[in-house]
Image (cartoon, rainbow, N blue to C red):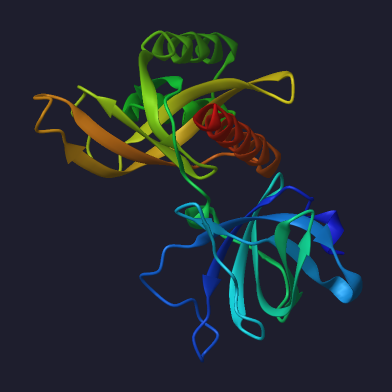
Length: 252
């Protein structure tokens, strides 16, 4: 059931569909919120507000809805079947016309935010030692020496901060000159739902840009490689909590 995945209050991005039921390109998504579940699987969402103006969805028009849930990003196509008001709030009732599907990692919502992290390069020697430790070919002394050596690599973390964060990766600045394809370990910690979470994430550099207004500094975008789905869900939950906090502060 939809209620097993979606929750009232979930953020929704809305994009109109063309005649082939594909989102119309080059149109910024409208931002809304899930407010209720209707009969027969219908969904009630608040009317999007663009530049302080209520945007009325067209009755009978089909839209793509992307839901930002605690379980990740999900999407489906819907048709507007009714429009109404509830306590002077414009409400759109939409009927799904496709199955709810989870979006892939590369499609995770990315929030611009500053958050402290630590990082370090994963060296070839470190990967070689890790392979030896897993090979069961080392004697007791050799295994201990190898593990001690691996612990030495963990002394080389550097501090920086994120430029943005998503369930699939992050972007940060550094004066280290890495290459695209280099592997990093990233330490990330935060508090979500009142619980402290800490992760050490193997990541790969997928983009690199030189910051010309800051000589010697590079902007890197990395993709998370070893995250369990429950850990990824915790990161997504944290991102949504931060976005709600940002919006609240902006209103104040």
